Amino acid sequence: MSFQLIIRNRAQCDIAEILEDYEEKENGLGAYFLLCLDASLEALSRYPTAPRIIKHEYRRFFVKKFPISIYYIVREDKIYIDVIEPMMRNPERLNEKLKG
Image (cartoon, rainbow, N blue to C red; front, side):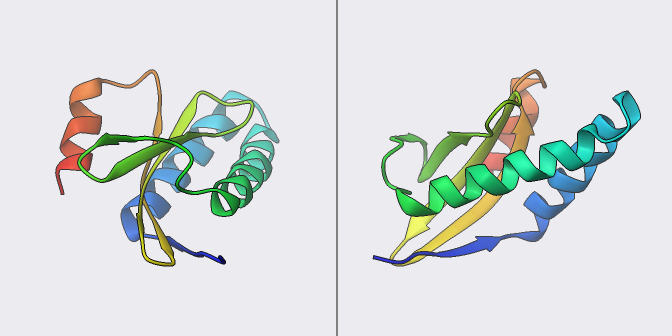
């Protein structure tokens, strides 16, 4: 089965924020993050139901080589990417984002 990947606005904002943080740390690190994110999204889209549900309908997939988690929901043939969050951030912030 082929799945359509939909990156919602909130996740796009998360990506922009993370990208900026990595570029501030080291020139080119943000671009490398985007390459790893792209590879991770491609892997996720092949087997989206492999990770177990962790909260509500959300599943979690890790970005390769970065401490970043992708939170998403699978419905029929669509994968909705809702949150992309660094693992070191406050868990309260993540809980708020996953509420709705």
